[in-house]
Image (tube, rainbow, N blue to C red):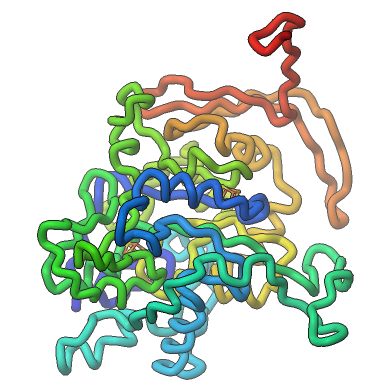
Length: 424
Ligand code: SF4
Ligand code: SF4
């Protein structure tokens, strides 16, 4: 085991390989307040990559209804339970010191999946990450418990839907959790592969399985805490999300040579998704890039948080938590940054409001944004605090500084000419 620095945990941790970081890292932000569970992302991915024989159960992108849904069933609850058994009552955070850029959520004092498996790994060479192999049944019914809420029980044990409308937190709640592979900085799938078939690309940090080398031992399926590596019986190999790498490379016919976002991002009806490439510093932390929209959302505004950072793989998927959901549940899922993220999101300042308007305004990757100030158009009070809205213009730029998109905080009004393509 080597020592590597995990900024999401605010400390060094053990990992089976030496630290090695890509020049840029594939990353994304999903705003869970906006997901409508339409599954358009899921079908965009399915119809692009996993429509063949043996891939029927393969949903590289899935959207599950939390708290009960999950694909494979109960993937997160099962792993949380294993970790709790390995380290009873020790899976806790010291949420102090959050101002330090190397520990934005404080310090995780519990054990990661690598640390919890260390003893057995050293003793008998078993998997270097704590995990489990889901059953065939758990790989069925990908949208199980769709729209099932958590809440107080009423007549006949049914959840009452009329209770708990107090904002910001509802007593009856559910939310849609959209998920893809997190192209982790310390991938458990890669660490577990006895064939060295899994690699992380040095140019963009995308994690891929070499189909020629893979022998289908399923060690990656067992080790991935997010269960995003999936076995295919017809080829006897494992497969996983490839981050639509031809699009990220600018090789899609529509891309004109410029990096494009993945299919699931581009298809998102709720406009919850933004994907990008971020620069890394020598120690694997994010290099300061103040006007990169992902850097801003994650490291400046701190409204977007990693999914189960305590697992220790340093996932590169970040989520703006849903504001109406039980806070204890959210803190277990996204760590100690939840309260501050929701406070900030509920009463966004001028810059945040503008950046949120960049979501899904272009399919090309935005590397930088600029805001041009506009007039004040609205004033209100949100939970006792003054809220002002300005009709600022936000401009998104591509890798070479070319303008990709220009939009305003107030939705622009487009007047169609009386004669247009669809006129009768
Ligand atoms: S989410 Fe799972 S499959 Fe994806 S890189 Fe991380 S460990 Fe590997
Ligand atoms: S397309 Fe967007 S809104 Fe629809 S389910 Fe997927 S993430 Fe949610």
